[in-house]
Length: 474
Length: 142
Ligand code: B12
Image 1 (cartoon, rainbow over the protein chains, first blue to last red):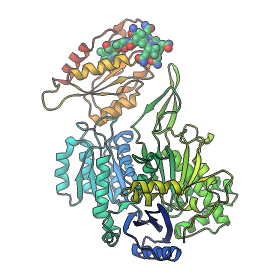
Image 2: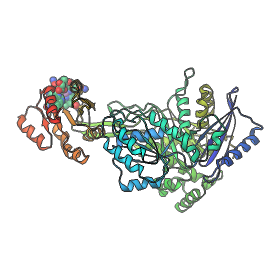
Image 3: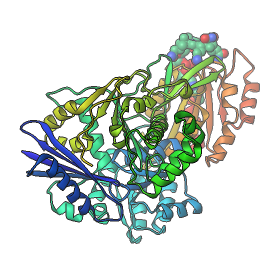
Image 4: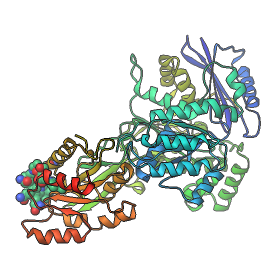
């Protein structure tokens, strides 16, 4: 059995050829794709490269995932920021979406206009526990239905509001579904139904909208959102199968042109005693995505977030030059930094910043609170301080001469006191960007996918700066 | 038995406020309220005012029952009514009980101070849960 996996990205189309009998990756290839051109162009270019590289190759099964056309763009609405708004965001991110904005309470006219401007693929509408507040979700539903844009609406809030919602949706002219509440009871999450609804819409509508209908006709397997496939791959590598054990807890960072995705496979329970856990329960397999932190499309936001000054200090390159480079990257997302160039050094510094900020946002926060009886601590989110490994995924890390140096930014430093970063992890590299491919293969043959992922994770040591290059054909 | 007359039950948010860790009474109180037919959202111990309010907003709670056992109730409860007003929980009944102040004080004074802070009811130590339930019934028109 031979598989061909395709990851239709916003920047690259990445192919992997897999031999199931030999349980190995025969070869990988990637070709640049632009948001403007037909996805099939990138696919054929990559396939030609792959064939040049490994010779004639026929496959039995074609498995695809996509983040083409900017990925699955969503906005999430809830009631209270730290409750249903957060639950909505978590549900969307775990389904592989990029949540551009999260809103709480009844949205304002400005926020409504902002949603129209974002032009999302899907709006996830939550709010209220079952039997709880239904005013806000009903009002927001009416407002969202009147918001211009060709988006689908998923309502996953207070079940007691479903009749009113149905009535509003019926005449809206938009594609609407009502599913189970993401937070049916206070502090209890049930994100699976919302997640499935997102996937269904992705398959039914978004695939078409992003020009992937022709691809879908080439395979009987459903096209998945890429981050969903990566999350599945991570879960499999961490937890293993019924027969074979996984590698246990880890944190993975996928640094792309448009976003930085962080995946943690860990319970994240407090590592210190006398810490009170606050906030929503955290899933073992968690994904967060930062749409403002990317190496190309969103490099300008990254620069703003990290500060040109800080970057200049870190890499010894003048601020003007940094700003010029970032401008070039945004204008032409296909820009590559040559090996051993100043631009490469700059890119790697930017990568480190993106990782530090994204991992910081992903990790839980330990807060000291002062009480009449002295100090105590609370933890909101996951404590990842004892997470034993950090895995690097994605272009810049993969192509770097010193990936460990970039990944070190995912480790705790005093500057980030209170953020529960891993303290002393080992570093691994997903040499050939295999996670999304293995997430797809894993849905058919988990043993095979697990075995391949274990082979493909390349351990990095701190001083190993000249590691073997990935066999990627550009 | 279901409170609130058949169809919908009344929802009560309860918990122990501030840095207070006394967990036993909270469990008994929550259990007794549930037994009495209320839908209970129990936030446990060490609950901040904000957490009470956030929970009450999401669940459209009908009342908030605050426990304080360790003597610092007066500090912990200050400003809670204002925050409820701010969050749109207009006129939500706020009940507080346990050992809400330090030591043995004239309870009439204590009650006056808590009412001035906007609490609907403030109970002296030793008040039974039944008393609070009877008051909730009266307040919520069950
Ligand atoms: C066990 C205990 C502890 C344990 C708690 C363990 C745990 N996790 O639960 C530990 C050792 C941790 C502890 C610590 C402290 N404790 Co202590 N503790 C007790 C003790 C002995 C029993 C509490 C208990 O469980 N009672 C049984 C339950 C069923 O009763 P209850 O809690 O009172 O709850 C009932 C009623 O109060 C009522 N009720 C409660 N809430 C409400 C609300 C409403 C609206 C109504 C109507 C009724 C109501 O209904 C409940 C159910 O029947 C009491 C003394 C006592 N005998 O009560 C002291 C006591 C509560 N503790 C006290 C103190 C001072 C402390 C400390 C400050 C001591 C210190 N200096 O370190 C710390 C505070 C720690 C903290 N951050 O909270 C004082 C409080 C004094 C005051 N308020 O003036 C008490 C009263 C002892 C005393 N006589 O001095 N304590």
